[in-house]
Length: 169
Image 1: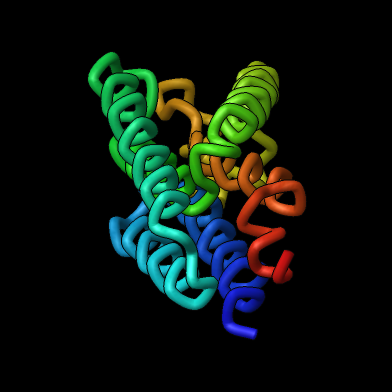
Image 2 (image 1 turned 30 degrees about the vertical axis):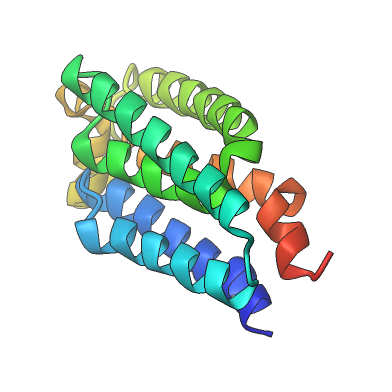
């Protein structure tokens, strides 16, 4: 069924790509966020999502985009993170927005603490040959928050409203 494929394959695959891309380059391409938006549109159509529910998903995405760009404006997260957060919120919907934001924040805090702890130690020579690891180890680089955003969504997914819709119930 198309809804199951979109929720169980396409959505997690795009999340994995976004996390990996952010980890390796500290960038999340716009086409990944656009792919998530398109996935939601296809899912809503295939699931015959009621217009009211569709509206709540759009509201969740709009609220997340507003919050994300406020955080971007304060220099807390990058623009790609803000767009990814909004696209994931659109897919998950208003029903799961608070739980998702909490999970993403917890994973983001854990990721930040882990990276800060690892940066206190010198980078082994074997790892110093990998540019993405050198950048991750550099204190001036920040944290690839897309990893936390994607992880939060994947962990929440089996409990999310879209998961139940995809399964037909």
